[in-house]
Length: 595
Figure 1 (tube, rainbow, N blue to C red):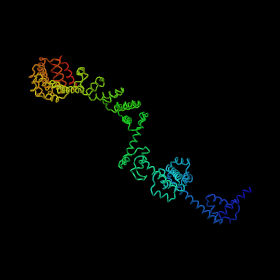
Figure 2: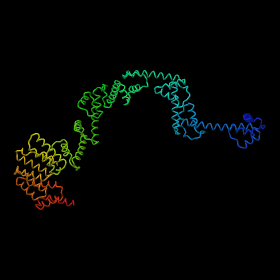
Figure 3: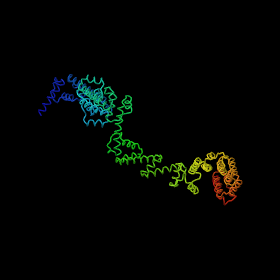
């Protein structure tokens, strides 16, 4: 207890000496003065009573010292806060609003400003508190310190990333050229070892540049500046990096033809190696892009079909996997064409058939069938593909159809006489007989061709082929046949001309029933049914069959566009013979339903 009292007394004397209060006669350790001095020494602000007590006790010197200390404390508080804000600004941590007295940031920023690397936990704290910019600066400082060590510049004090040295060291680390200003800056800062490292780099790069020029046949370029465009290009070539268009253009403009040739060969060699791996041909030892395998693999890679010569080349070298991949790839390409709505040509189909891709063939045929149905106006979804696809394929190839088959399909109502398939068939027949006329010179092909042109709804073509000087034709039967078909064509255009043709045909061959059948049809077209029947009767007397006459009358009904005229004709026929012309009732019913 005595020792404690002595300690207090010693402490009190020390404080009195420190705050110049030794003149005080109050020696009690428990006095008010001891209490006040202890508070002051602990930086605790005095209250009014305590301040007044000092004044009343004539301790003016003590009071002044205390006040000065408190002022210094307040100023230091302000200084610390100001320094914190400066550090926050410098290290881009302005969005951190925690008091400097409690925040960990103050300590972290002081470490950074002192060039001391942060530990992992401190870097993590920056990330967690969304101080990304500060974290980036800390990493740059770390990089700066490491670069200073690497390039013998550790004596340089500043570590902030915006420093000139940091930019220089980063260029050195990338083996980039320093300009004269940067080099002189190192010398002025007495960073001689760093400058020497730069010189060593330059010497190595010059040697490298010389070697590259020799390697890539660019020796005619004498500019030794390692910052030159050529050096950068040669480095890219040596690193097997693909050159940009501008870089290739630069080489061309400066006459580096041999260098460009080497580049092309290198690129081809690289591509060849890659293609061999891709298409399972690595056992082929030749690496030169001049060999035939390179051409074959490029053809495969382009999606092209291999020819027999290429296939045999691969077979001889036992590259069967390459052939399989090529076939699968080309088959996939053809299948893709189909899915995109493109048509396969004959060579594509032949290739698929030769390589047993029946599924793709069927897919192509189904797609083609749909396209052909649309082209030829077949809207029935149930029509048999086997029959009609064959027919339409022949038409597409300009091949003639089996006339007996076409007639049967028309009689069965499967094929319309006026449909696009029938028209295409008639046109092919007309062209065939025209060609036969040109080939043989036989004019008997003319009426046949004319008749087919009319069936193909091209009466102008029928008139064109029958536009002959009949005086030069000796055969009266032939003259009559030509005039009948010509008159039939005129029926679709001008009935008066049609009648003239029919009457002339009668003159040339009075015993033929065909001119009389034509005349009957002409009068039916005019609505003069009685006169028409007269001429039909004349035709029957000369050998025409009643069924053929009835078929002709039916054709007239089908081709007539005037409903009133069709109704009139139907009424006439039913009145004449309701049993024979019972089919005419349907036209009356259609007209009534339409009304």
